[in-house]
Image 1 (cartoon, rainbow, N blue to C red):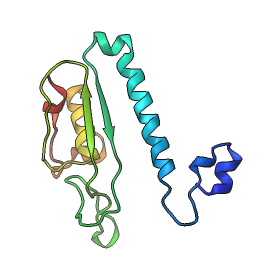
Image 2: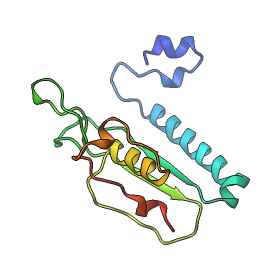
Image 3: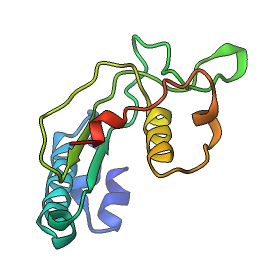
Length: 140
């Protein structure tokens, strides 16, 4: 957001500097996520049910990537999406830490949720190129 717009809404820390990246904005976002996750994990619902929190970052700048398994293709065959981006799943149920190195993307996450909740599939989650699901990350 432009500094003038950030000032206008009373959030001057959200204005990017003329030089580019402003780490105070990233820190502000990190603090928001930390606070929100803590509130969820302190709730009665979290403590008494099998729940999960998913933190999924958006794609990076697409450098060094040919897209994800379900990435749509645009004009001239350009892949729309991809790039390395982290995702963290936090489960309320006790169990061992798990990880996966399987290539996945937002469509894989959506496909996982659709499958676990017995829902139909949307858009690219139905495509054969989608890498399936990673339900194992949600189970104790």
